[in-house]
Length: 332
Image (cartoon, rainbow, N blue to C red; front, side, top):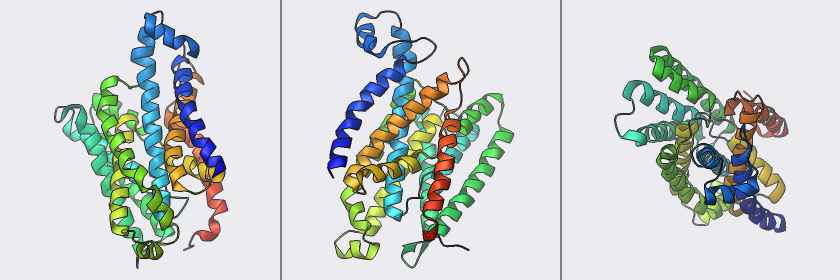
């Protein structure tokens, strides 16, 4: 508890500093301590900061926080460290919703809100289906959960492939953005469209911390202690779908953030969800800001897709988790 009590304020104070450092990083270098003066005096670099860098780093922070707290919540509900929005198909469902909207509907209906709504619908549909399939006799089987996620990832991948096949040139460019993941299209209107969904997801998920602590004892024990598991699951599923839908509609499919961040925080600060949930949101934001800075600068002036950066680190981490927890996995 002493460690977690110190870490939360540290992360909260570190996030603004990371935002400023990342905003100054790029082909046009700006020292972070010069940013307040540039913004106040409208000096050299003002437009770069205001219309290019700040929308990008803020969007990275929003997406990172949304994915990380979603992963922490799913791991708490399923009582399994392998649960992740990408692994169980939620990200793929949200991506398919976005792909269907881009190709079959377009941006005319609902304006900038259409894509987030489509992503949310796809994400919550897959979340509910995966959970129902994995549930047997009141318990969620880890193997069934992961295999269901693989199946829905495959189905969503086929659907996205079909949309890619029938898309015109402009739609194909937009779909490529979702497949690779990027913050290159960050604008203030895009943030305005997705921020309400992300905030709504945080509002739904953060108060679940105490209930998730009780769930670690087991669903039956949580029920005896007055926790409504059906209500808790509905709120968690809805909040995760909101958060992941906002993240995917803004930046495409970015994997492993919801897997890595909560697990590392539990190793450092313990399993208390009153610490894990807010710390996951802060750490996820910091992680994706850092990853996006790498994507922008590693092969400058070109840019790596953010999904490649997270995949390089997330894939080996997931393999390590599988090795660590292989005794808890049911073999078929």
